[in-house]
Image (cartoon, rainbow, N blue to C red; front, side, top):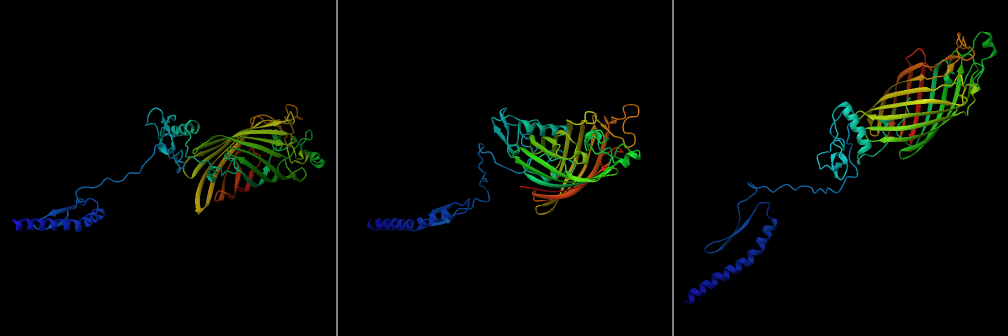
Length: 434
């Protein structure tokens, strides 16, 4: 009996010793075990054995961890959400929304925001994309959109830029073959000897001339603009030299122009700006350096994104004279447009090309004919009527842009109609922004 009890005590004491020795190792094995592996402790008849169980990784996989998304957090910025008018896709922030509750409106790049106005009005057609972009600008602006100067959207030489920006510009114009310079007092004041414009020399009148035949001119101007947000003010101070065929050569400062820009609409696809420019008669009209009266020129400026690298730029306005000669002054409707395309050249450098066109429509006023003076069947001292005269022009232009801060280049506008101001107008510019 005593021997049996002794054997049992020895067996249980051995088991306790093995457990004390093996237990820390089992804990470490559980901490270091690979995913899906289970550790078992098997007790034999004589001695406990510790061995790993069959690996479970071949038959069971743990679920992949998913990122935690807080619906109350709205991104402060993201990459461009729109590819342009000609490459329509459901990538615009507001257009992509509309699947949530009736009160879940649109946020950045298609994410819905509770309580915001829904914007599910996207239509993948040309007109639908125009309306969708216009609707988003007014009713559902994308909070991801960060307004900035884009070279391809403001590249045109003969169309003013829609984006207000603090900048300085030096421009040189060379116009050749200008005819009817006093028409509607748009370029010159009345120049038949009865107005403020240049008077023909005696030799010209003795030869039977009653008005200027044509002229060439050069104009160097300094443009300075100061912007704050979507509003800016600017002034233009030109220095002009004129080389008429009959009148005397003259040079000096031209009329000072002051203007303001106010953005009415600003989103990634479309920008619309109201520009109002006022011409002050600070030059000498008798020398052909100014128009001799005040003029106001309100116009709308538009920049439309077509693709990532292509923009359409447009200007439509009405030039309105104030205080000019009552017989000769007249309003002038003007329009212009440019298709701009950007080509990356180097890091931070791009080459932007433009195809530009536009025109003028005279809504009133008169002009002096070089040989007849005025209408033969009317009052010859009052000039010919300019109402309905239409001028059209077109030409290419290009700029080299460095990191959207500095750009320079040139362009040309050729007359497409027999009636014109300058038959050929060359323009060169240097701009830098602050």
